[in-house]
Length: 328
Image: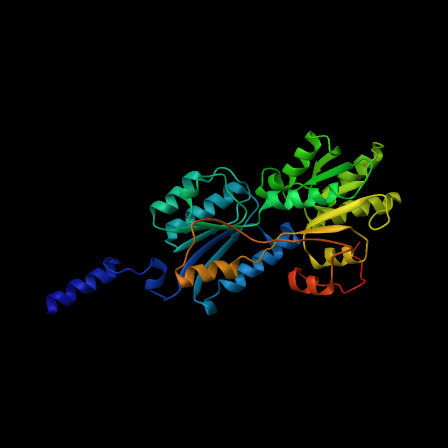
């Protein structure tokens, strides 16, 4: 009997023979590594990072660490570190969609379940367990459908992209490029806010188009901060915009300041990108009902005509400046 108990104790010490995940053995907490972008990237990312921290907390039964960087190589290095640490789950929102195959395969070989969130990765579905994503191509399609529905005689569009090569940029750009190729609209300027989706860089794109004498009537900015920068350039040049104005403005992400701008007619439309994936992931983990493959979130496009206080309260992210308050 003593010999049997001794063998059992050794097995427990070695961590073999029992079906508990590595992160649960010592603390009783589920060990999670989160690879994400920094909150400074955008209002969307600020809400996303906060959501991850709030849900994957010790109070909710998790031992979680989050790494935030816009550098893809730094993200991959962080993911490898979490794999070495023996996390139970590895959650990834990739800065760039490529270059992840070896890291994902290492996680799989180590018995770690990988869940992608927010952004897709160019890899075989067998390299991750599940993904809860915003369908960036769908977002772009909905936004472009709205642009084409405006009834403009000729659509001359300024395209302001986010981080080049990111899933968000690729998806939101695709529908614009397809419509341009089909002759449905003209892209008169094609710029980017850079890796940080910068308001200032977006403003420069529009300033350069104005200085070059470009004739345009739509600004398609791939996040709310860049839309804000673009409109600042319009204001400085005395170009009308929004409801009743010459230039129609659409942003992405559903920051409440942007939605209030739409409601006030200062902008024309905003496309949702829902940052709150953490609760659904936690439910999958705790229920043991983990899906396979990609699960897309449902997302909305709101215009000056369709927006309401209730929708802003329910779906908006970050601070609400209040009804009637315009954020310039």
